[in-house]
Length: 368
Image 1: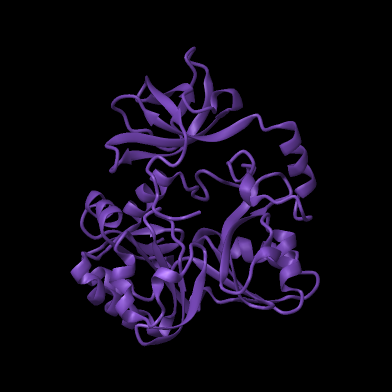
Image 2: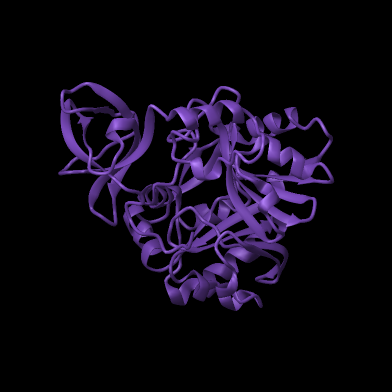
């Protein structure tokens, strides 16, 4: 029901800007302000600002914080120094994924976990269930607004609002301090677009002030507000996984190409069976594919081989604004997962040819 939808703190601002609002992950969210195409190109060529305040944030503190994070996440959080972040996932006990997330080390024994909006309660319960040593946990999701300022002109658009030299913040690093006159802002060189830029974690009481100042400072550089529609095409061009589509409770991180965040140098939830899976080899893999001709792949469309036998399904698909071609992600049998493999997408009863390609579809500007 519409009345059950949560709203982000700047809901009224988005409506005043003419955004089309849609239900997403339990929130009323801006899907577009002008057109998905225009907003996509704005981020790839200049700079845009997304309000992604629906994301969840948990603080984990105290002497047992790292132990808890190490046990529930697949990546090795012991490698983090204060001011560094890492991409990780929460494996479940059945070989799938509870959620993917970012882990920020704010200070010694003080971490911020950033989770997907649709999974806030699920993730909180899952981590609490494993919190047997008494790490201090606090769900601060409703106190923090999150703005992603993304695009090649992000540094120019934001630099006048902070004393920090933004160009010196390495990828997956962050600083904390005053930004646009607001205290206690996390300026993080992370994002979900492959276009470079920053994510700004702002206390709710300063959200409007920061949004307005970013809009004003970015205007000379072509900054525009960007909705969830373009966010999806941007992330898909990079081959970034979306929870609920490309990764789920039923998909293994190894099948999803997330072996790089699955570290067997420590014990974590289900690590023994995932290690066995790695040694035995997976039977299916998440791949990116490019349509050979016309046709737009969509989620749940069937993928078939040359003989017309089902080999999987599309998990995410769209018309790539940068390539003007249909692109998609989907799970296929391992033998068809190598770049150059020919597969077919069932679009309205026709088997349309596609080619498996190496990700990303579009080169990103971020440094790994």
